[in-house]
Length: 269
Image (tube, rainbow, N blue to C red):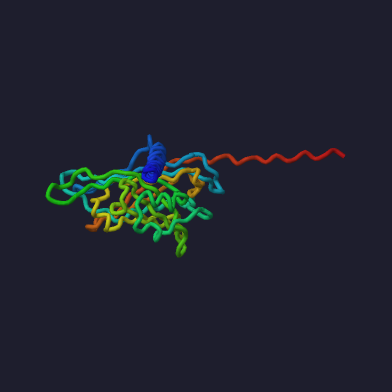
């Protein structure tokens, strides 16, 4: 009984951590105007972004909090297609690094439920977020599915790219845990590219319709500088049926005054 209680308490701590970070991350984008992409047809997406603080150095990047969210919209009662890939192309003034942070390999996650993941990889958490899957199977059509938090784990650097794993926390059983790999890579003359893949195995949970990711300033994985008064991001969504959406948004930033170094008074001779 005591072992079971410890397991429940451990899972509760992880859930509260994900929820707390997610709610704090959602505050970043509050008051910001989201971008809606809705070409002719019934399918569209809405996404938003937040960055804090707004005052940033002009030269040396400093730690920032970053939040991103997106929703898949369907105007009629049809089932949304399965989302397969989300790409964020961040501003050239943004730097992403998990150097020196604990690592959790993907092989360590195989067959584990959320209690075990927290026990094995809890110190590798670098971000959080939220997700919602809508079941689309017959015969009842699309209905509300499962919503939960995400824990983003550091997978280390492989092949010149940082590997992260967004683990859905909505189910305590290993049969329902969804792990979405994220690759973060610096692209020459462009900036940081973050690519999240939704595995086909996630189809048993339904179609991913809501996604949010948050990196806290305290985590130190994202740093930014203000070069031209804006921090931009380009978003690309790819669906299983071949549908492709792309859009862009920016957030204002201001150059933080450089600190003045005072010269020590020299003794009078």
